[in-house]
Amino acid sequence: MASLVRVLLRYKGPSSLVIRSSITTRHYAAMSGLLIEDPKFAWLKELGLSAQNKGVYYGVWGGEGEETTSYCPANNQPIAKVIQGNAADYEKAITATKEAWKVWADVPGPKRGEIVRQIGEAFHKNINLLGKLLAMEMGKIVPEGVGEVQEYIDIADYAVGLSRMFAGHVFPSERPGHMLMEQWNPLGVIGVITAFNFPCAVYGWNSCLALITGNTVLWKGAPSTPLTSVAMIRIVTKVLEDNNIPGSVCSLVCGGADIGTLIAKDERVNLVSFTGSTPIGQKVSLMVQERFGKFLLELGGNNAIIDGVLYGPLHSKQGVAQYQQAVADAVAQGGKIECGGKVIDRPGNFVEPTIISGLSHDAAVVQRETFAPIVYALKCKSFEEAVEWNNEVKQGLTSSLFTRNPNKIFRWIGPKGSDCGVVNVNIPTSGAEIGGAFGGEKHTGGGRESGSDAWKQYMRRSTCTINYSTELPLAQGIKFE
Image 1 (cartoon, one colour):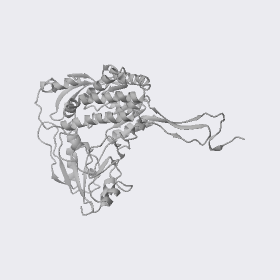
Image 2 (image 1 turned 45 degrees about the vertical axis):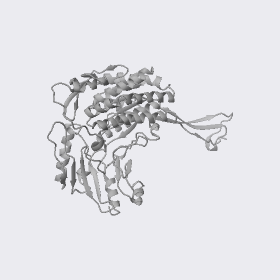
Image 3 (image 1 turned 90 degrees about the vertical axis):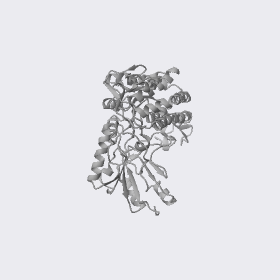
Image 4 (image 1 turned 60 degrees about the horizontal axis):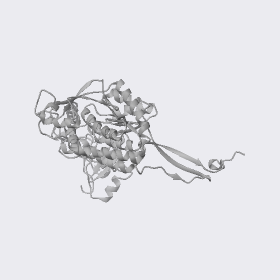
């Protein structure tokens, strides 16, 4: 790169799309019924799934809302049906989840960690089945599906260690005979709303840390991946019940925006963790903030590097339409299609990976996030200009620089470098180790999941002063005389 960055590749969409949200390209046989009824997919029943599934759990299974069908994006064939929750189901779930907190909060932290360890072990036993389910319902290739389940297992292991380590500090008091200290306590009920692109791992990031810190969890997964949600909760709650813990410690309400709104507006939900698009995340944050609640946001990306070409179908027909619109807009704004640009004529939601050149760095289509495998190649004059273009988009999730120049490396990760929450050097933007905090800045929401101090987000801090003397002195030496 002649000591300067010459090309900035702008991948339109979260880093997960090219590498992490791809699916096997094998063809499923067309059939008139549900795929779960096909003998080839009998393994789905080993996860406790059936042709029609209840999508609400709060110690018992239920669901009186609308029936939804889960489709395989590789061929748009129906997999199975799920009965979602309605407002009445939500009320039962939040009531049970809050009541279960009274039991769970009294369980010692290390014991909570042991139960989370067992949950991780249960996921390990089902890793291949769950991985195939993710591939079938979401659109990843099977190895990526298995990898996402492994991420849940890893965060469970990480949480087990933290269950013996989260602690406050004791500070020197300026008053004799006094102790000044921090005390961390659980928030209560954590509401987790996850997106379709990571239907397993994001729940793991939140729930494992929430559980070891003494919280109960109410989960609403993406409406288009309800089977994954149901299968996972079956595994989690069996472990809880085997340990004589109420299953409603981890409740589930499948549903759409109506359920998400109930969670966001409910004062009984002490923290709302939302993963999804920036526009919806903004609405959620306003609803939570209006009631002075806490929220954790992981929103859109717009990442400045290409991840690779191994990928599968887009998750939905809507995604295909967005891809087509982005390509058309790019051409209208002066872009040249170097490769790709077409929908693939075959069953499922497959499109061609696309590279577009010739656009201005501030073109409207470059500035907006499109959840599709489109890369905009932008030529820049200098490293400084590349950093400026990287930072000018409203999203700030993840970014990457390829260089062997130490000067560039440390400027890239420094105060005048990338303004993203994840800043990489000589690796792609996809893939995040669970030991580091994951999340972004600006319109990505500012939230962080996992990482060394992530447990603090699920707890409240009290500053405690204990006077063990026989005097009653005031701070700052104030005396009323």
